[in-house]
Image (tube, rainbow, N blue to C red; front, top):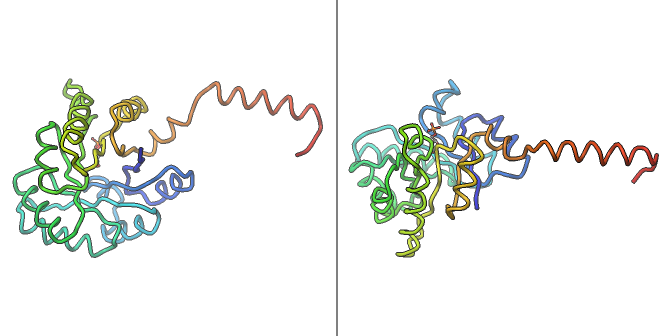
Length: 216
Ligand code: E4P
């Protein structure tokens, strides 16, 4: 399973990359806006920091403009994957970008049939947003499981990228469902490594070791 980091903060991406846990990056317009920096600078730096795909989202609503923006984003670096929203215009843009050999991550997916439509249009990734489904009282993982099953049934090469992850439990459920990728905020990456028994066990082992006054 691949872990992407859901962030436009180059410093935290660099730190997570140092931990050996990052296979790619996803951004969105809100995350880029939060940095207060020019989007092209942020995206180029992210591409230099990570050895894997970096998703960058278009901001137009009409397909021809989305295609223009997508091509511009793709020219920034060969690692860029263009994110298009799951709208009719977004799907038209997805087809057009794919026909130009630009990889597309179709975002804002909330149902299995939306994911099926995106896969049929050639998406490299589909991004179901599990946290936002939880927010409205629906189980995002029923949707993820359905997408995984549908893609297997028809041998789609499109990867299921679980997005809007808010907790380690979301990651666990994404892994159990057989999703190819989960994109994780940095705080979730930190949380998955923590266990009080690990800390306690290490303190005890080292205390016993130091009593021996040996060195390795
Ligand atoms: C994914 O690509 C999105 O950027 C992200 O996961 C959205 O997460 P949120 O619902 O926590 O904003």
